Amino acid sequence: MLTLKEKIEKQKEDIENKKEHLKRLEKQYLDELNNRPEIEIAELLHALFCKHNHTDGCGWYYESWDKVGYSRKKYLEKAQNLIGKGYTYDSLKKIINDFNEIKKI
Picture 1 (cartoon, rainbow, N blue to C red):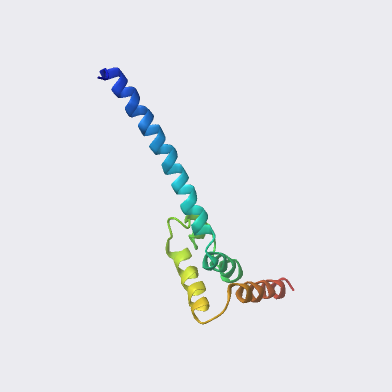
Picture 2: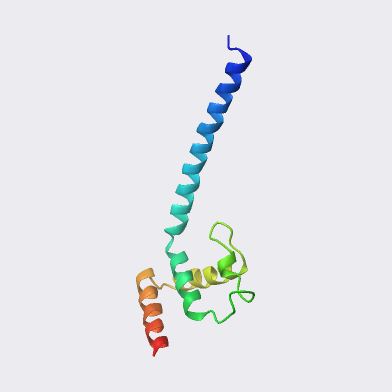
């Protein structure tokens, strides 16, 4: 039978193991999230079209993909809409990059 001190130490070890497991799951979640093509398209669309002040006019940089706010949701919906219309990730990326080149002129 374990002493109370041994039970406490075992619980601490179990907690540390669960924390490590949780960190691995969070990393896996973010990796999967960041590998969604519509997210990259949303980021490219935002870079191309957003004309708002990023201090107080657009919340893009105050949001994240695991805590999507209004700005990211708006561009994510636009990206999903384009993909839903049959545009491929590669074609959208090329078109957006071409527009960015034109924008530089």
